[in-house]
Amino acid sequence: MIIAIDFDGTIVEHAYPKIGKPIPFAIDTLLQMQKDGHKLILWTVRHGRLLQDAIDYCVQRGLYFYAENENYRGENKELREEVSRKLGVDLFIDDRNLGGIPDWGVIYNAVKATAEGINALQIMSGQSVLPEMKKRGWFAAITRRGK
Image (cartoon, rainbow, N blue to C red; front, side):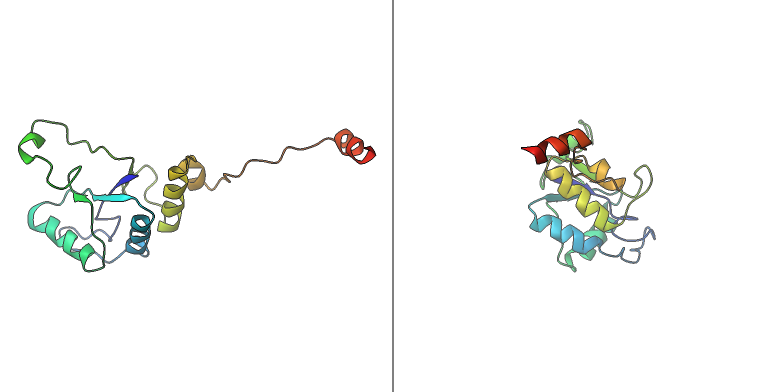
C-alpha cells in the first residue's frame, strides 16, 4: 500500500516550526511498515527549509520516504499548480483524524489488517476480526454424539 504520513503531531509532538519530541514507536513502526513492503509518503504542511528539517530528522533515524509532499519523487512541479493536491494513496496517518491519533501499535495492526483486506475500523475500535464461532443448540450436540 501507499501510505501518507503527517509529521507534526504524528511522528513528533507539536512544536512547529521547531521539531518536537519524538512520539514513542512512530519511527520504529514506520520502518517496519517499509519492511512489510509499504511505500511511505511524508505529507506535511512543512515546505522549504522546514520540510528539509523534517526529512533530515527522519533520515537521521534511518527512515527514507518514497516521496515528500508529492505522489512520487520528481512529480511535475509545473503541473502541480494546475491539478488537485490530493494524493493517490491508500491511507493517511495524521493526528487530525477524527478521534485523534491512536498509538503506533494500533496503527500498525490497522495497516496490516487493511493490507490483508480486513476492515481497519474493527481493529481501531478494539473489535476482534476473527469470525465468531457458530453457537450450536443442545439438539445438534446430542445428535452428533448419537452418531
